Amino acid sequence: MSIRTEIFIKDRADPFVKKGSDGYYYFTASYPMYGKDDKEGYDRIILRRAKTVEGLADAEEITVWDEKDSDLSHRFIWAPEIHEIGGKWYILFAASGSENNVWDIDCHIIMCSGDDPCVDEWIDKGRFTACEGDSFSFRGFSLDMTYFECGGKHYVAWAQNGGNSNIYLSTVDPDEPWKTTAPAMLLTKPEYDWERVRIPVNEGPAAMIHNGRLYLAFSASATGPEYCVGLMYADENADLMDHESWTKLVAPILTSDDLDGEYGPGHNSFVINENGEWLCVYHSRDEVCFRGECGYSDGDSLYDPCRSARIRRVLFDDNGMPYFE
Image (cartoon, rainbow, N blue to C red):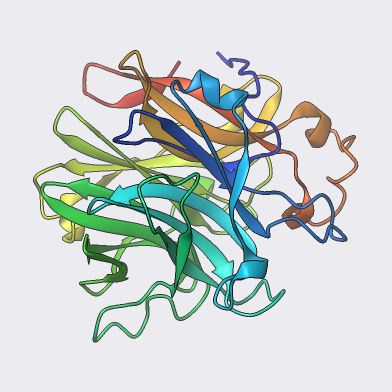
């Protein structure tokens, strides 16, 4: 049965919510372009914070980073994520390495100079760096990096053009989390029909650890109604850099067919709310956009701002597999 989910934060794609050690919930997302002539979109990193997840909807939104202030990270800033790594605040994001060049996108990182990510200065660490001997990572079109800690080790996963848009995994040192410490491992590539609609894509990895198992969600196919969420999982104590440790589901776990009045769910994040419940924060387009009545949907989807953040509660079945309420 399809379920209607109200918009959480309008026109904010690639939503990411994280609870900090300071007790606040933080929200960031891609700042949109309103059509191809918009001179301000995809040019900044925004941040909200509140004591509850629901409070983020009405929280003040501030800009903590703008491409105008950087010589290393330029426009087309996508999918930022805020993380605490090794006792410091970092934001991972995709950005162009040259001005107004959408094809020069790679993973970048900034570091907060202090303890307050909404007040203290952010330091540009530039493009993510691959470890010695890795001649592949971050030397092409890479984006959608996420970070997680599991089994006492620290990992990053990201999407990169490796013939298709695939997802890769590596380790990092929390003292220098702007560079990998192992060659990239191909985690998943688009192989099933539902991952290859219009464009073969795996992107937007998102990690969740629950009851001894690491789940890694990802988004698949082009960004229209066909966009959907797939899932992989592994034991949290397994060797995650061994592909054999992972199981990939043969069917997606969230599609447009599961929704009412919204389309193309994807690029989610997971967070535990103040009541101890797991939430899936994702973006989708509403019916106005789907019908072509938004004023943007007849052009390049890159410049369509109509992807909005929504929230579904995550439950687990008897086999420990997540599903959405």
